[in-house]
Length: 197
Ligand code: SAH
Image 1 (spheres, rainbow, N blue to C red):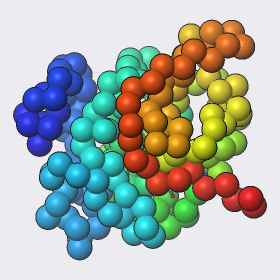
Image 2 (tube, rainbow, N blue to C red):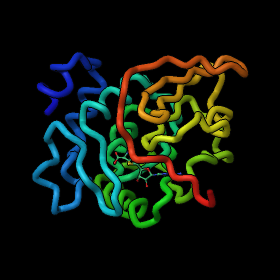
Image 3 (cartoon, protein in one colour):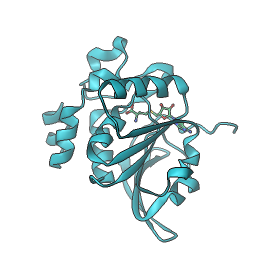
Image 4 (cartoon, rainbow, N blue to C red):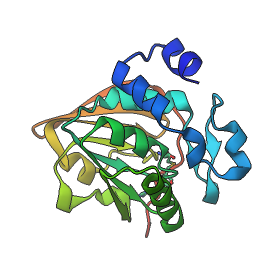
């Protein structure tokens, strides 16, 4: 997986490669689909959700560019696979999932792998995690139709968010009140659900 799908496609940052090698992707995938864990595709989770293709996880993590001292907010815990990679690269990860069943499963998996720098929350990711803001970086792994303002406000100035908006991947860097958006190509994600909408 690493050689062909990650390094072979131009992602060669050593810390990221090491993190992706260290995380056992199959542990995050339900048994029914486990044999597909290392294939070049997204894999189904319970409740109609998916864990992203390894390359997309690599690309988004590369774009986030977290370092050892960063506190990162992740929206869309899902299986917890992306969370595990972030936990190896950053100081701490604050992860928010709307579906309690998935959030609980992810937490069990991550705790069984002995990650101790992850904070879990069940709730609507549009609100972020105000009590722990501001964050050095934010990664969103479900797709809203517009940039959620509350998330942008929880980014430090100089901080970076990686987010699919509709079917396009962006980095959004905060410079004071200004959002500097850079496009990184087309992607497909499950929608970021608006509860109560
Ligand atoms: N990063 C995950 C994949 C996430 S799939 C992994 O590595 O497995 C997207 C996740 O976002 C799903 O679990 C979905 O339930 C969650 N989600 C969708 N809308 C959300 C919202 N408004 N707030 C929080 N989580 C949301």
